[in-house]
Image (cartoon, rainbow, N blue to C red):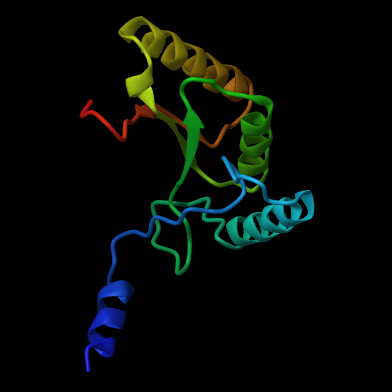
Length: 142
């Protein structure tokens, strides 16, 4: 039937977008479950390290999109994740979500603050965070 065609489409995909559990809102999940997710996620990401992201390494990851709620800005957990991504040599791009909830001035402030965090992290060392910061909204086109 169609199963072979579905697998062929998946194997020829240009990219995969994978939502990893436990980083953002996880409701009433127990602490032990969160730790289990954290361990699994770290192992998965470490197994996909591809420092030469210009080469299409089998199973290599070109970038991680780190989603950060723009209403809160970069927090301590985000910095911990950035530390991990840097140590794992994984390229990552910061995506600020829910920008529709901010005024234009609020968006400019959080984007500027985030750019400052990236610049400070990359000062004097090689950082894996890409300089561009993306803003997204689930409600309005930006």
